[in-house]
Amino acid sequence: MRIASLGSGSQGNATLLEWRGGALLIDCGFSVKEALARLERLGYSAGELSAVLVTHEHSDHIKGVAALARRFTLPVYMTPGTYHSRNHGMLPHLQLIEGYQPFAIGDLKVEPVAVPHDAREPAQFVFEADGLRVGVLTDLGSISPHVEQSYQGCDALVLEANHDPRMLAGGPYPPSLKQRVGGPWGHLSNQQAAGFLKRLDTARLQHLVIAHISQKNNTLELAREAIEPVSAEVANVIYACQNEGFGWLDVSVLGVESALA
Image 1 (cartoon, rainbow, N blue to C red):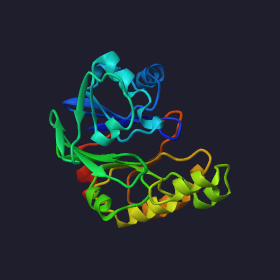
Image 2 (image 1 turned 90 degrees about the horizontal axis):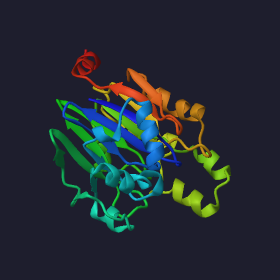
Image 3 (image 1 turned 60 degrees about the vertical axis):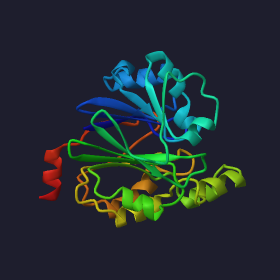
Image 4 (image 1 turned 180 degrees about the vertical axis):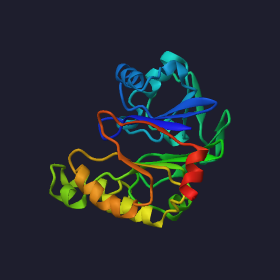
């Protein structure tokens, strides 16, 4: 398996997951033109995708999904709440994720995870194929016991560290938005992400990607200051950015053996 990102932040999000049997785009918060350019930068084309998977209906995650699906006749997976939250127009092959039940796309197992976020029926995901486990966890305001249990034992993890509480409190957002972002249904702070990592079984973790870092309410230095003390045993820790996301990361069985050695 391998993963990459087209971009990560409040201006647009999309994560690319490839396994031996296909490829999946998780969200598309960019216009079709921009998404295609970003895919090309990663050496990929939309015609190679097996499907698009949607986490929730906020525009920085769903903006280009319907248009991309129509143009390339791609199946789209989302929860009923996400589907009914807005008018998507015609979706050629809509697949509803009912009750957060696991499902398969070819030989990729997809485990939807319910998360506390201010959307209709948001989901984050854990993927399994070829004995490997990759988690994507962004856009949630708090770590529930269910979330903590669901992401144990990953070989790669994309994790949100959205804001620094002090920067958010003193930043340019209006009070209502500050309350939303920093609340239990908003986004994870650097400290919440670090606390989660401290409680997580990271013995197999080959790659940790810190993602969805706010450009107005956080800095790379502050995120690193919180994350580095709890990620010393992870072989590769990188920080995704809005403009370039992150490049391809290979997740392999050999990496698992090395991590456990």
